[in-house]
Length: 92
Image 1 (cartoon, rainbow, N blue to C red):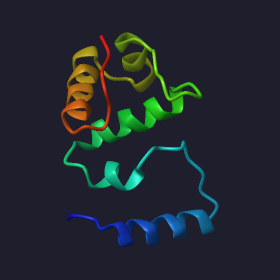
Image 2 (cartoon, rainbow, N blue to C red; image 1 turned 45 degrees about the horizontal axis):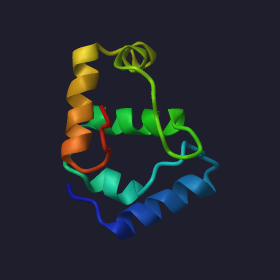
Image 3 (tube, rainbow, N blue to C red; image 1 turned 180 degrees about the horizontal axis):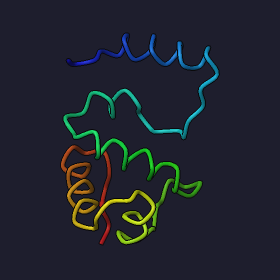
Image 4 (cartoon, rainbow, N blue to C red; image 1 turned 90 degrees about the vertical axis):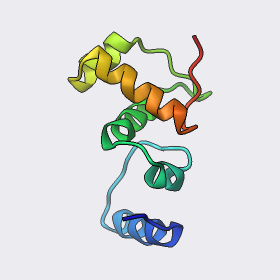
């Protein structure tokens, strides 16, 4: 089911009213409507939590895999998925 911006706004408002808090995710509507796996979404939220005030992120694939309980190949796959969707920019 494809979510609309209006659906997301209503859902977010309900969460805020119920007292939920979360890491700030840039362009949350774009993340939720992007054609990426749930694992990629979780990884992006984790990355937003780990980023510095300038929005940069430097943990190794090993660190991300350890923190999230995933394998390194799984992290790499999801990083490329996010990059292909235009949600992140990988700098080698």
